[in-house]
Length: 588
Image 1 (cartoon, rainbow, N blue to C red):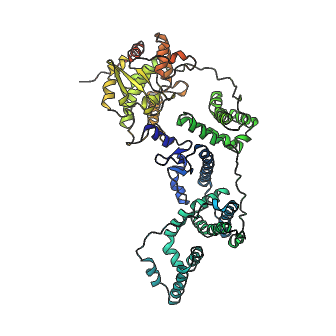
Image 2 (cartoon, rainbow, N blue to C red; image 1 turned 120 degrees about the horizontal axis):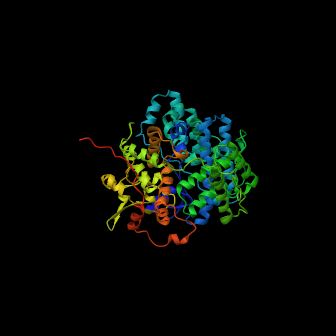
Image 3 (tube, rainbow, N blue to C red; image 1 turned 180 degrees about the vertical axis):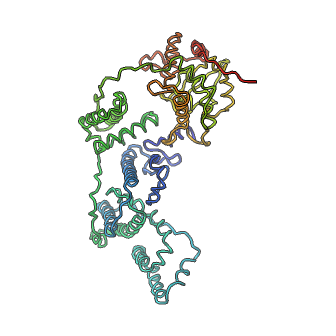
């Protein structure tokens, strides 16, 4: 599988074409909070898989996108129900409610297809039960009394002689009449009914916002078997022009426990995000972060319909975020409000949304005045770098020991973001015309720009043995245990990259063991500020510096012209003066 195809498999935003048939599918990774709670959900009778996959039934992208939207809303609603069940527990139903929920679903199916019964999907056939090699029936008969055995044989003959639609009713009656039959067939029957009618039951429960205990779900599946069978017989009757009421469905009461959840046919905010992600190149982390902020907004306004969002809704949310006092103006504007504005803007550009009501709403509070340097002082930097030779007194993994030894040095002499260092793999130590350099690439995990670039290696790092260290680690990661073969480390399905744990380990070591307070509470990022300060002091070329920092100008198009040969980067990086660090002597 190509890297693009592999990545597409895990990003799963928008219809996904099957590689063999070309049929478009809805595919989505189950959210980590639900997948990690799959044990508890299984106890409630809910089967949780790592990935949701549903065919959209077409190769044509336009109708597939419409179906994708509906399926996405259905799946998101189901996930919300699971979260509710984890928080509140499943709800018990009365026998009347069990019949009513299945009956409502069957009646809706028949009503939906009365005008055109030929468009109705066929009934789902019951799967074959597991083979028991002819043991169940003789064992059961041997335990029955004479009169019960005689009655059972009579009912069994009637069942075998009946037509398929009559067999359902007879089977249900036999299971009720003969408890030993229910016990013998119980496990098989439950699995068969879940496979045949589990989706019917899920849809019926979701309509009322219900999650029920496993035993209740099995009973509703059983009711679905009988009532959906009646609905399909009604469809066949409509094909023959018979529109008389179906007696069995008419006899079942309507469910009165809850009002159905309102199903909006508007433009979902979350769907807009999924569509935007499928039609543009957006990093998975950005999509995940935006989704998280959108869900908070949806929870605040009480709905997910982009058409119903008002400027007042966005303003009130902004005011609520500000009132908490824990979020900076930049965070409120650039993360929370930007999430809403970005999807509404997409709705204006590509759908029938008339305007972006979030446009112009910002957190206009003044940023807090600067309090001290953003980066380490030279003295703090030297203290941390000298401490790397002593390492840590804690019991940590070998990759984390190596990170404490090398990551601060690499940050000090490259100015890179810490994740770009901790995710680095040995294969990306490169050389051109005898000049070594580091290739920073999103293939190691991610980069903020989504692009790759080269960074020169300072002579002091070479003197300290960095090149030998990197080569000793082979082609794999320097600072974390490698993932299993075949793992796409550019997209881990919502899980944190192991390099992030390494970065936190280094940060904790600086603040808790070395004992140096981090400027603005960011012990790893402070190196990036110090590097920038030192680059100015030594006269490093600004374009070269910005290129190596992975933060080139977005306004000066000329900076995108030409290449940066490693020899030039090597020259510029070595303008930085060495840190005056005393390396401890090795006792002989």
